[in-house]
Amino acid sequence: MRKAIIAAVAVLALTGCASRAAGSDGVTASAGGQRGDTLTWGWSLPSTWDPVTSAVGNDVHALTLVYEGITEVNAKGEAVPGLAHSWTYAEDGRSVTFHLRPGLTFSDGTKLDAAAVKASLERGKTAKDSTIAPQLATVESVTADSATDVTLHLTQVDYQIPLLLSGKTGQIVSPAASQDATKLATQPVGAGPFILKSYVPGSQATLVKNPAFWNADQILVTNFVLKPTPDPSVAVAGLQSGQFDVADLTASQVGGVKAAGFPVETTDVLPVRVLDVNNTVKPFDNPKVVQAISTAIDRQALVETANFGYGQPVWQPFPKGYVAHDPRLDNLYPHDVAKARRLLAEAGHPDGIDVQLALGKADDPVGELIQQQLNAAGIRTTLTVQTPGVNNYITRRYPFVLDQFNARQSPVQALQVLFGPQGLMNLGKTTPDRLPEAVAKASGHDLKDPAYPAAIQEATKIAVTNMPNVFLFTVTRFTAHTPKVHGLRHWVDIQRFEGVWVEKR
Image (cartoon, rainbow, N blue to C red; front, side, top):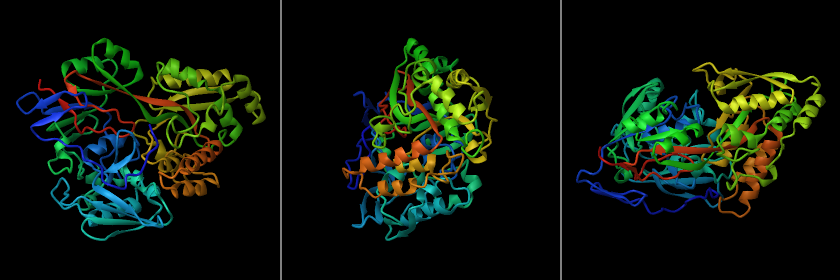
């Protein structure tokens, strides 16, 4: 996970042809009958197919099947060309022009030109229910300078833009389709590698290859099926029966799937587990209470016991090796039960406190172990399962929640989502006075500037030491697949399927 860098010049495109394609494992398939036409992926279905209103970070993986961003992030998390083959910053850094590939179209056949990009970005800034508007705050205006050149005029110098536009924020939606936002939630119209043909919420999405995708030569399956991640009890059976070709696993499933003879790809990715805390609700409005919670948690035990030894303890939203990770925050609140009790007493709770910890699902072993650890420090914890269908980022019903921060393509965007006054995961909607200035300073550095790492790390430090979020450990992505699947790559961020193929059954 090397630091993300801007790609201001075109890079070599992946090459391939319809009759012959090589997977990353070196196996080559030919059109003479070896290659199958359908791939089934066990992953979460999106909360909506509209990237502008999506309030779930994990949606980006499914949305990337049907939408393409102005840029992409490669397997290392670096910004590379997408719909735009290159981009150019003005000398003063106050605007950036993206040069679109000629002849682009949406999946409905309508033209994808600079005017369409302008309309899509402006919708992201102004739509009533937009969840990406805060990430576009530095974009003052957008102009279509020609059919293929679109310029973002900025309120300040911001070199994060190419990274930002590789995720949901930069996924371009057909202006015609976006006229009916309700319809768009289940019938997306984008310019990604696949086209959604049928969708049964909670069951599956069936897609077909988009022949107009700019990199269609590298999409090596004709049909793509997306189904919810298999339950632990049926994961092996689903792979054996062919119900899934590729399936996302939890740490608890890895041993059983490997024992059954299926390959499991293990990738250290950017997301981290975290406790969301609303610091405007008692008793969490007292910083010493939040410090007591963080001090009472044995992160290494969470990794070893609840997560089967996968991951690393963290006290911040970025893993080691990532440009925004600040080494000064490592071991910020060491596990110390006695100190946690002292902090509670200093906060006015010498006899302890009672809190309710909300979980996404009842059987999350991390939640159960956290409950035990907090109880030992006098933080008497009751577990409750969030009401299905209730988005706590919107309702803020639960002030103390076991969650997962699914990272963002730009570290500045990540800080905004977690700590900004309009950030989805900022339940209290408060923010440190010094943070906006620190974020602006980091954004003002070219990503290749030697001063950039120190600037973004300082912003991380200000946020983490002033905000209530309790970060726990890094996430590992486990991807099981049948031996017939080839070409899977290890992506630290968005999962993509260019170059992936499956042998004919």
